[in-house]
Image 1 (tube, protein in one colour):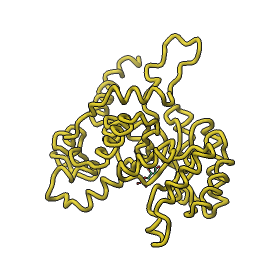
Image 2: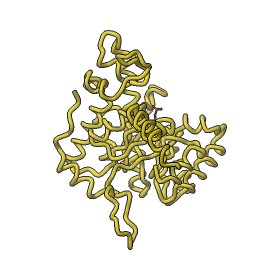
Image 3: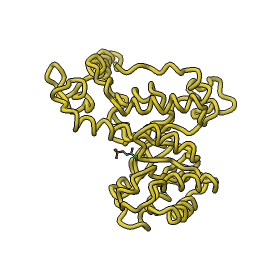
Image 4: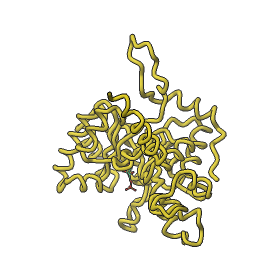
Amino acid sequence: MFEVNDLHSAMIHRRRAMEAVNLTPKGKKIVHPAARGPRIFADSAAIGDIRPLYEAGIINGVTTNPTLLKKAGAKSWAEAKKILTAILRLMAPNPVSLELTRTTVEEMVIQAEELRKLGPANAVIKVPIGGYTALAADKDPYTGLKVLRRLWERDIRTNATLVFNSTQAFWAANAGASYVSPFMGRLADYMYKNDQPELAPGNALYHIIDHKNSAGDQRTFNSEYVASGGARKDSGVRLIREIAAIFANFDIHTEILAASVRNPVQLTEVLLAGADILTVPANVLSTVADHPLSNEGMLSFDTDAKVFAK
Ligand code: E4P
C-alpha cells in the first residue's frame, strides 16, 4: 500500500518559502488554522463554474488548457482570449494558468508575452514540457525547456504541463518553472487501460467510481479502496511522491500542482504524497464534501432535529 512520505521536515522547510493561503486579517481573534493549507485550483475555463467556487472561498486559482477552452465555447483565438481575460479579472491576484498553443520557441515566447498582457498580475504561462516531436519528427525536443528558461529570464511565471515523470519535473524546475503539473489521473487511466484490471483487483480500483463494491453497489468506498491495495500501483501518486522527495531534497520551490484529478480519493492521496496544490474539475470538487456515512448521519440528525422545529 502507498506509504506516507518520511521527508516531512524537509517538506515543511521547503514549504515555508512558498505562498501561504488563508491569511488572517488584522484584528481577527481566531488566527486561521490552515494558513499553509493546500491550495485548491479549479481546472476549468467555464466562468459559470469558476465564479461560485471563487466567491465561496473554495478556490485560490484556476488552470485552463486548449481542451477546456474549447469545451467552454471558444471557437477562435480571439474568443479564447476573451474567456481568459474574464477569468483573469475575476481571479486577480490569484494565479490563472494559460496554455501556449504555438509550438516553436520564438512563437511561444511572443505568445506568452501576449497572454501575460491579458492579466499582468496573475497570468501564469503553461508550457508543455515535451511532446513536440510527436507533432513533427524534426521538432526541437527541448522546446518546452527552452521556453521555460526564456520566460523565467523575462520574469514571467510558468507552469510546466504534461509532466509524466519526475525527470521532466526537476528539469522544468531547473529551467525556472514556478509550477509543475504532474497529470496523475491520465497515468492512472493509462494503467487502468493497459493493466488488465480484471486480472488484478487492486488495479481495477483506479477508477473507484466505475466499480461495484462488495454489496453490489455501483460505487467503491474509500476504505475498500485502500484495504484492497488499490493505491499500491497508482503510479500517479508515486510520481507526485517522487517529485516531492526530489524537491524537498534540493530545496526546490517550484510548486507541485497535482493535475488531471478524477475523484476525491486521489485528492487525499496526492496530498499525502506531497503535492502543494490540487487543480480539480468542478464536477469532482462538488463531490468533495460527500461521503456515504455523511449522508447517512445527516439524514438521521435531520430526522431527529425535526422535533426542535416546534
Ligand atoms: C492541468 O492543468 C490540466 O488542465 C488538466 O488537469 C488535465 O486533466 P485531464 O486529464 O482531465 O484532461
